[in-house]
Amino acid sequence: MTIPDTYAAIITAAGRGSRAGEGPPKQWRSLSGQSVLARSIAAFADFPRIVVTLAPEDMAQGIAELSGPVTLVAGGATRSESVRAALESLEGSGVTHVLIHDGARPLVPDAVIRGVVAALQSGAPAAAPALPVTDALWRAEDGRVTATASRDGLMRAQTPQGFALDAILAAHRAAPEGAADDVELAIRAGLPVTATPGDEDNLKITYGADFKRARRILEGTMDIRLGNGFDVHAFTAGDHVWLCGVKIAHDKALLGHSDADVGMHALTDAIYGALAQGDIGRHFPPSDPQWKGAESHIFLRHAAELARQMGYEISNADVTLICERPKVGPHAGAMALRLSEIVGVEFDRISVKATTSERLGFTGREEGIAAIATATLIRR
Ligand SMILES: Nc1ccn([C@@H]2O[C@H](COP(=O)(O)OP(=O)(O)OP(=O)(O)O)[C@@H](O)[C@H]2O)c(=O)n1
Ligand SMILES: C[C@](O)(CO)[C@H](O)COP(=O)(O)O
Image (cartoon, rainbow, N blue to C red; front, side, top):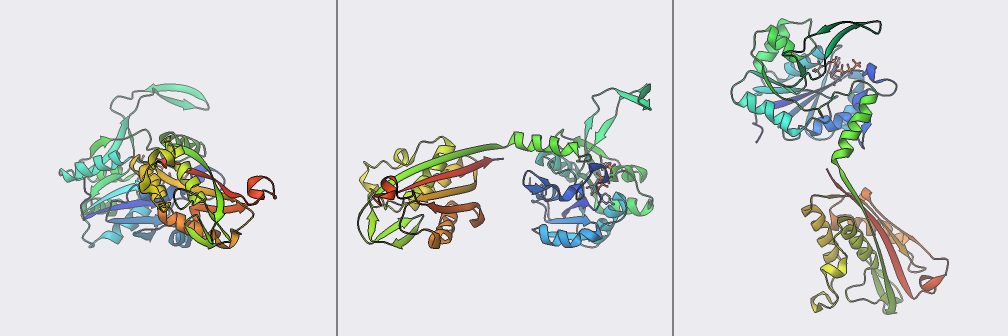
């Protein structure tokens, strides 16, 4: 489903997260390598417009850390005040519908968002996700249960809560005292609200322990694979070597069926290894004359493309070249850049380094060069 041009997402993130305990406000804390807020925003990446409410004192951090087409709006002292500031900023902008989402719900599944959009698209003026209450309900005082309560017809409210912009703005203006959420204001204003399917993963990070739960959910859905590769090529007569895609003048060359780029071969095998798809020899048999003298980027590109086809992204790679000479240090940056271009991964996720073998063994006697590589692949 394409999100219509006239839809906007409002992500509320101006709270202080006082219940989440020590440390920076919860929306700025890291959740498996990305801030809670960045994850909440990313869930709405398909929206043509995203407004984020931030506490005035967090604006500089917002400008520095939040990438993409987001508009930052200063929030207020309560969630309702923050939402209202965002709604006011959209008045007259051509936006017809808004989805208002807690910045503290970073794991909202796409299906939950699309359920709300679908309800609005079919004419509902208000729609929000919810889940049935499945536990028994009690009243308690001082740790003692004093009564039970019926759960019939009770739902647990989630976000994003979606509305026709004019209707929810009017509801906010009519109730400056605010409410726990926007659905409450909509109901007070007499708007019919459609309940759409919520999801247990769409938890609101409220207490410190919720971070642990969120991490479990996130990491449970990730498939992380590690692969290693090892390769050796012997020296022969020549005047240059190819290492990790960089041509380096040398008083010898490396012998091989292809261009003998030992570093690139090790990395290619690490990717195939992580995918459990054999090695270079299986995909490019040395017995096949068409690979004679081939440039090794062909192999590495193939492995990276296979990873993509299998649904994995390459998260990082680390290559170590083992040789006395040529000196690798001066070329390591250029090598990492070349590898990053070939595999389509950011430069700062690729490492190329070198070591000698302290003049021991075949690399120490300068009979050849060895390389080892590790690659991490993630399927989310
Ligand atoms: N003045 C406020 C208060 C809350 N929020 C946002 O509304 C969402 C839901 O609120 P809640 O979980 O209560 O967050 P906090 O107010 O930050 O938490 P606490 O009550 O523990 O301080 C959060 O994304 C929060 O940042 C907001 O934009 N402006
Ligand atoms: C908006 C909300 O997340 C819906 O469940 C909830 O009302 C926020 O409550 P809080 O007490 O402000 O965390």
